[in-house]
Image (cartoon, rainbow, N blue to C red; front, side, top):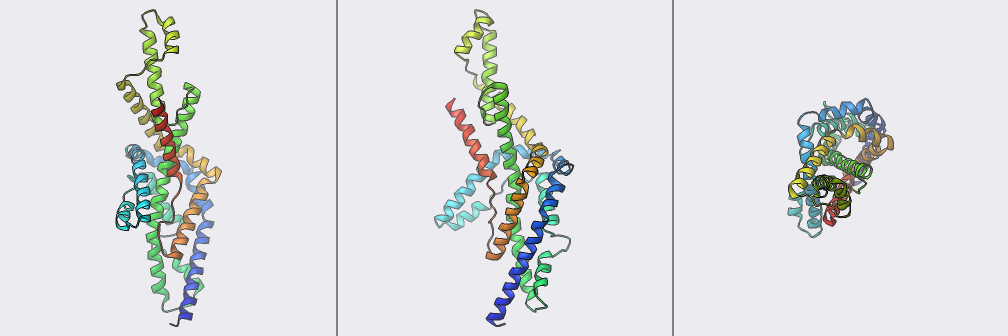
Length: 308
């Protein structure tokens, strides 16, 4: 094949890729409606019942370490230590929950049209090229690259659910602290510490040697410091409660994100990243910012504890 003919074929393949992803983007509104609005949101999130009650809190604990490893991988890549960076990039993002597995499978099968022997990418390319002996080889190569890029993109998409649950926990802690404790409590650590302080104060007031009435005045001026055991118990209880909430936070956050267009924009970004990866023959272009926002909130929470 002459260079000109080969370039013509490659241009046609690029048009086929563009056509395929344009069709996939058109399917986003229906996909969001079916899986993230009611009654679909219940069908999606009811899968959290079971072992996800254990997996979700473990993922929340693991997420900061995973994010740190990916930041370190980026720094090592910039420094030219590519072999170590590649090893860090292979670090798992956490335990896959049933909700994540379901959404990844539905994204691959329903949104991207893959699975069950379907080859929508090849079909899209075939519409732009009339029979060509190199079509099969090139389109198969493109599909293999799509699969590689897809595995990376779907793992990042699944990670956004952990980050969203973490952000939801932080918002709940902040709101609960503001309305019930009149304190700024931007996370489980902070609200656990505040609750421990409240309990310690109540116990100290009740045991005050001049009586509880004078005790309430005294400890209003000089708050009692909670013991370490009480602080640990209070924080652990709050974190356990938030872990259960994290499993089912999608029942609230998914319809809200669908209403605000967050789910739509996230999926559009994933598809644009996949398309860009296909054209540039790279992978890993989809890196949502949810995890970084969640970690910033963790830093604020830890700083709040440090100031105490």
